[in-house]
Picture (cartoon, one colour):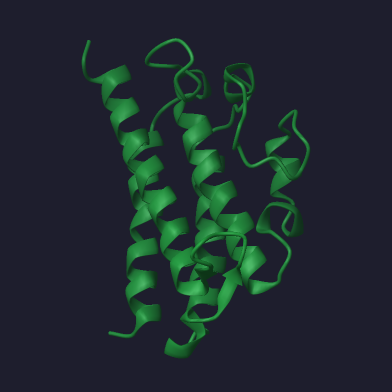
Length: 169
């Protein structure tokens, strides 16, 4: 298995995990919080896709799926197009409202772009530094692992939030 194939396999688990977390829930249920100030399922699913979208587009040198394919308009959120969810207030988290289908469809579109990009990479492509603002500098491979780690952590949180909200009562 090549490094690209390994990453594609790992990234390919994220959409299914998120879909299980949001499937069958209404917009109101997706906007519910397990505790005051906690992240909602809608925000978690949206943030997973937005973060992955922005970072993969940066690595690939392409426009984000969010803007290139009209997802920003489909969601109609009250934020600037460049919003990703990082540093949002608890009120802003609550403003992320969308259907489960819309959330999953956007994540799958981002996933398709991720797979297409990662599939072009040869083993030597993982070594170049893509961000020298850190010590040590960040290579393309390390950035891809970081993106994947963020996605899997938030996907796990989404499953946990669903369980807290709908299976513990």
